[in-house]
Image 1 (cartoon, rainbow, N blue to C red):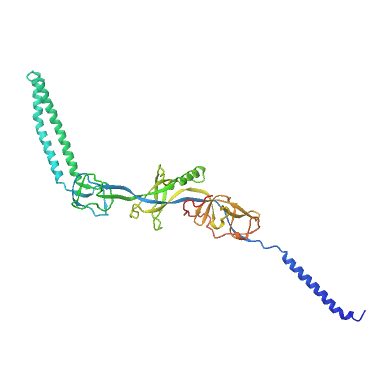
Image 2 (image 1 turned 45 degrees about the vertical axis):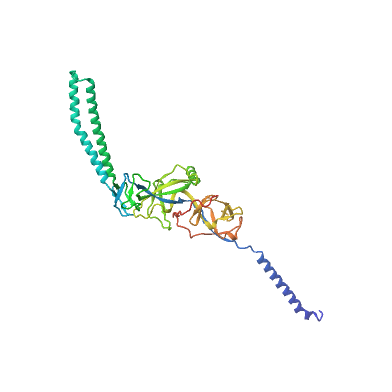
Length: 402
């Protein structure tokens, strides 16, 4: 052994030890870099079919159930208006009194003429009977007898004429009392006491409207009508039995009307300017909340979808072409993309027409961290509605399609 070997041994062992420690350190770094990344977590909901009542909210206008424009049927001077403007009136109530004096005189004159004709009739009848006997004895000529028989028939006709004149005068006298033909609420009067009116004039004296019940006329587009008819024929929707004709109403201020209406009929003529038909709905209006001409929104039932699939709106995105898509997790824990066909928005959810099957796990959170084909860890979403609960359908008319 050489003298300097003992001196260099500690240095040599120090170098060897440092090399071993460096190798271990590098090996540890490599092992950490090669470990697999954690599997991303996503929150899903199960697509489950449920029973859903589909409705359409349509704008409409109210109109009176009955309308009567009051017009005079005889000429004369208005003596008195007999109703408070804006009040409720009943059928038969006297609204205006026209001066009856001329009509009383006409009735008396007709009655007098009738009495005169009736007084002359017995004498003319006896004379005609006497001439009939004389004719059989050849005491009078046939011409004389024919003249007396004609005079008898004329007297009888005069009596019928004056009877009709009396009835006409009596009717005209009755027309001086202008009465309400229907019950309802009467508006403002267009004439005052002392005004001259004429029979069947263009200007109505006043207007009566019956508003309990009241009509709501709702236009529905023919395209929506055809779509609904096709869905019913294909079996996608079922009628709701006796409840199918029940209609709800929303007032102008957004408040819900407390009474349900009944769909009475659908018009058979399409308005060429709007391409729509009119649905007429009858609503009870005991408190007079609805007035003719008000703007309202009617919620009309389309039918029942027995197998509706609803998913949260945040689960739907758009591809570059604008088509709706969603991501699901398959049975092997991999992400898949599905193209959807959407019917409409139901609250904060989409009603899916096609693209999903019952039981599909739809991703609603964590979509930004995954791509189709990636493996994920599923976390169920527990903040949904309870089992068996029916979601409320507060949808607008079809918002999204295809």
